[in-house]
Length: 167
View 1 (spheres, rainbow, N blue to C red):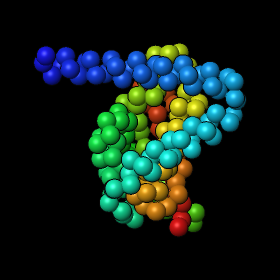
View 2: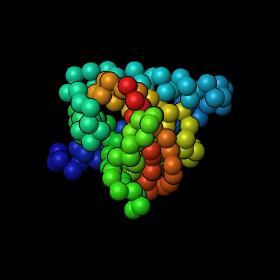
View 3: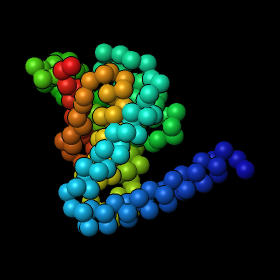
């Protein structure tokens, strides 16, 4: 079997699993309502902490994001993201009294793709699981709490604001 066929099969297996998760999430959200998001966030946070437990610690956001990319890659997670600097902003990282923030663009997100394939809306429990994952992983890497907030959710990409809280 050639590499392209192997990748196609692995992607199809992942997609089938994620479609199952999207169906499960849709029904859990319907039955539990808002608590489903909180449960998914906590589960994602614990997973992020576990995956990033061995990552190198840093106080620099860009270095931490690179560490997070490595954690995702090492655990076969397809959440590719890149930083984004709005034109009027002078620096990539915006510093504030409550902490620092950076904008992130997610183009190839296995959760978004699965939600679209299943026909379920974004910003639900699977998205909260992702927020939790990022929060837990960055807490392990930086030793600081963080929040990931959707600024724009779309078919081709999502724009999110990552806030890293003051220690």
